[in-house]
Amino acid sequence: NITIKINGMEVSAPKGSTILEAARLAHIEIPTLCFLKDINEIGACRICVVEVKGARSLVVSCVYPINDGMEVWTNTPKVLESRRKTLQLLLSNHDRKCLSCVRSGNCELQQLCKELGVTDEGYYDGERTPSIIDDSAVHMIRDNSKCILCRRCSAVCEKVQGIGVIGANMRGFATFIGSAFDMGLGETSCVSCGQCIAVCPTGALQEKSQVDEVLAAIADPDKHVIVQTAPAVRAALGEEFGYPIGTNVQGKMAAALRRIGFDKVFDTNFSADLTIMEEAHEFLDRVQNGGVLPLITSCSPGWIKYCEHYFPDMTENLSSCKSPQQMFGAIAKSYYAEKMHLDPKDIVSVSIMPCTAKKFEIQRPDEAANGVPDVDYSLTTRELARMIRKVGLKFNTLPDEEYDAPLGLGTGAAVIFGATGGVMEAALRTAVETLTGEELQNLDFTDVRGMEGIKEATYLVAGLEVKVAIASGLGNAKKLLEKVKSGEADYHFIEIMGCPGGCINGGGQPQQPGYVRNTVDIRGLRAKVLYDSDKNNPIRKSHENPAIKELYATFLGEPGSQKAHHLLHTTYVK
Ligand code: HC1
Image 1 (cartoon, rainbow, N blue to C red):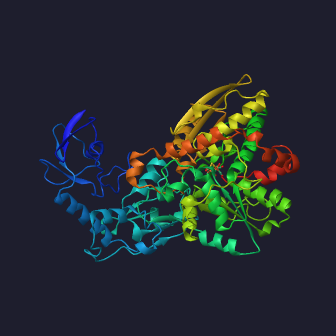
Image 2: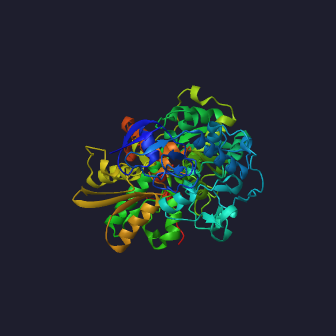
Image 3: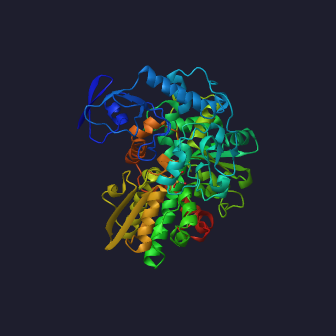
């Protein structure tokens, strides 16, 4: 360790720490804006400047390493004035329409201005970057006039996802974040993961919202409007209403959706179980009949688009199963419609997802099994929070309520879909019992749990060695697939999720500010909600879900049946 002085107090920090990290050990949070640990350590925004004895000018604490005997001051008038000036300069080229901005109240720029007492917004007024709205992508909108050039978006796109479709164009005052050749995002090979939105500190990036369209459908007496909520939403929605990260708000969410006016409140967990039935069947079929292996999961639409763009020769490996979101929609507009004597055309099927790529998925070809889209609107967790506020619900005081039957019943296997490794674990529970014909003694496949980007495990099942791998985040997916392609690794079954950590960290989840992202294990806390929910669920295997059993017995026949194929499976483009 190295001992330094911060604001006159001695602090001991590991060698190699930055001033920012050492200050944290002394309970001082130096403000940051561009800094994202391991992703965007560029010292560009200069909000985190501090005074260091002997240094000629203020130093950038997020990248400046400590050394023995160093003396640092984090809050001198000179430091505070510098930060204020930086904010004034940023505001001089910012649209400042806070009142109508989607991020008002959780904008990191707004928060810093408030904390540092920036009272004069127009101090350096002059030429401004014009507002150029790029709404060419299905899932999101970019507005350069709210961009502060922190480069978090381009860093996450390039370094974490390995895609790099946005970056800094031009130089100096003309600098703006955009795509190559000024193309709209929708014309690039963006996969719609929304990780850029999740890290954006301001309202420059946001999902394309369809809250008003959904509320209009609810207000239409001729429409039967149903909603499904993805596994990961319950683990994060509470953050929008002040609950600690890692709070399960499933009950209040169901109550809120009912009060918003949805005719039925259902759970994507139901169709996650259905996905397992179809996918485990597909896996065993491929193993036993010499099909293409490794089989790769297909529930994450960002991953699917990535595979189609960047690994087109591996689309044969993709499971033909639709995602749980889409399976839900297809069953809602067939089985459920029949049961309820409804015309599928009168059903409006809405999903609440932690994901922005789901907005893209609902529009894909071959995702309209009943002649109408399986899912009509897909909203993010954030949009649900806005909808709850819009209709005036006091979320925190709502009672805990249950989902509706029958499409609201899901197992423990289904709820863990939302964390990396969860789909694999759920599939193994069903595949192993199907192969051995015996009941599993231990349902916890702990090797495939955890937040590492790539995981591997081998299981001996009925004399058969089954090798599995899991990747989350597309940069990790690329590494794993290259190993498969080169022959360095041979797996039977691979789970890939587009977002690092899986859906719990999806691009549609509540945005946490940089300092929380840098210091709190957000993914781990949210994932724990799902694993606890699994542990507490009396039914923990998809094939034991009674609603799924009835669906097969009375409607679909067997997993992989012709009817199941028509409704629940899809195709890919190369
Ligand atoms: Fe996901 Fe899935 S787990 S893809 O992350 O397979 O979005 O939560 O709903 O469809 O079930 C997302 C989550 C979600 C699907 C399921």
